[in-house]
Length: 335
Image 1 (spheres, rainbow, N blue to C red):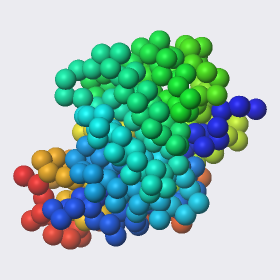
Image 2: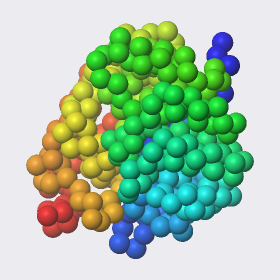
Image 3: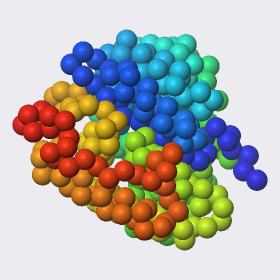
Image 4: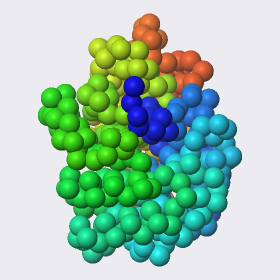
């Protein structure tokens, strides 16, 4: 039996934070989080990269955590606290804790590239100020900072640090297994390792990752829950099979980035209004949105042909609206 905290195991869903010109769409965000709670994800992470944290001011970020905690019921909520200045990170730390976050997710965000010593000092400062556990967010594609395993080891030794979220690993199952083995050999045994990069999650869980920090689960929790359950039930082949059925979505993540694709998925499923991303970020163009509709139709066809991975908490995924059926899409599409 693992001695790592169960809080940092299983499926952590990262919901989109739908944003309008007036701020957060509180009603839509509450619906998204409530759907995740109904799907019985293991945790909900508000204000991850998918949650647009870098584009929100302090009051909006505090509001997002408060809304998430209120809508999540008994599902623990983790909150992203990354910011360019340590002063602001500490402010977000206090706000998230006051709002009821069960843990904090911290990426070393910067404009000037940070040194290892500066990143360690950041985590040391936050750990000293935190009353809840801290998750190290290793996201070099966004932050431009690459953690070494030695730095992970130093940070993981801080009392508040309970988990590490690692980026996707290329090279298939053997490469993922080797990556986890090497990192596990450096960090305390009670620190959880979780994977990001949805397309490799089934392999990573099979290779020994404790958790999956999932972009897609924030909007379509059903198949992601099914992948995690298959691993827990000792059926990795089923987990890989379900993941492969989602290949049309993974391909879109590669083509456009998961942030814009998940926004288009949420819009296509009628969960949020269009546009839902904070400017200057623009949603997908009409060709990209059509590719998303096609991908969702392919995935829905899989479930309607009798597989066991429901795509929504209550059952099968309804096929997305066509371009003509989507309200005002033709006039609202970003240029």
